[in-house]
Length: 183
Image 1 (cartoon, rainbow, N blue to C red):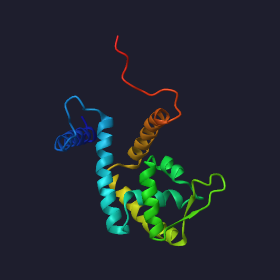
Image 2 (image 1 turned 120 degrees about the vertical axis):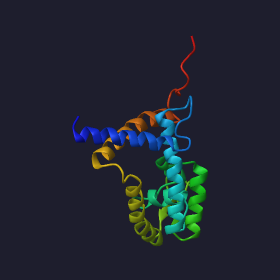
Image 3 (image 1 turned 30 degrees about the horizontal axis):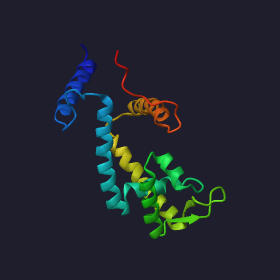
Image 4 (image 1 turned 90 degrees about the vertical axis):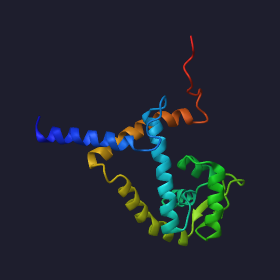
């Protein structure tokens, strides 16, 4: 074997040792990559929450709302919840908090008088532009041990999974996935 393959094998062994030390990473009967993805998401939420509190004085829910509104036109709570895959009540509470801070404003919705359109205020846009580079640096740090090809492949695989899961999670989907029928 050449040095490159030896180093690659060593890196795999090191990763296996490191993974063995992660709490909850290996669970008998539940040793599935998608369960590990949930664990990663939960760990990321903790880091994101801490980072946002420290650098922006806001919650993850508030950032989700602000970041969904800033790039485009106004949106309803329902539309933001769908874009963020979040609960409408969580989005509504976050929107109210952002509104109290002057970062968001509500306007009448000509399409539906019951669901106001939410917009970033000038202060909201300024906060978005201040926090966005910090968020980008935070996400770059989290994926810092992946090279460009690994990041691209990871993104491709995540997209592939999300396409399957999103179609099943759609409330208008004709059927839901479930446990295979027992014979």
